[in-house]
Amino acid sequence: MAFNWLRRLFNARLGWALLWTLLVVLVAVAVNLAGIRLIGNLGGWSHWLRAHAGCFLIWRLCLYTATGYGWWWMRPRLRQRETSLDAHRRLLRTEIAAVLSIALLESSVLLRPA
Picture 1: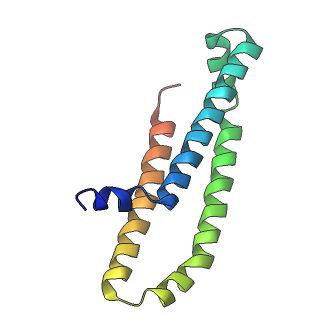
Picture 2: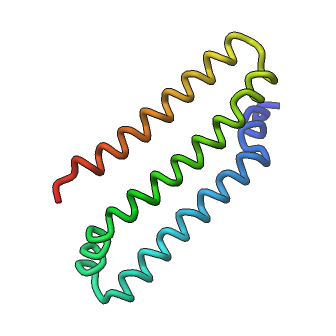
């Protein structure tokens, strides 16, 4: 009974989310290690990443657009299912936090010295 909150916290949904997060991190590490090995050294890999920064910006913008479209499609269904005013406020706070997070991440990339 004392650890009932812990069991609810670590349910199957959270387990899958953690597993997917771990998988994405492992793939990112593997890609970076493969890139460093392919280019030959860390300095060359950093140079290659800087040289292709525009392509990565376009890729991120495409991801943001696809995510935004999916959210725009899903939002009315979520609002119909959750009809309370408190749920709508939580949804709005989450949307604002997501947009601010993306804006801060992208501005930090753009403001970084070349």
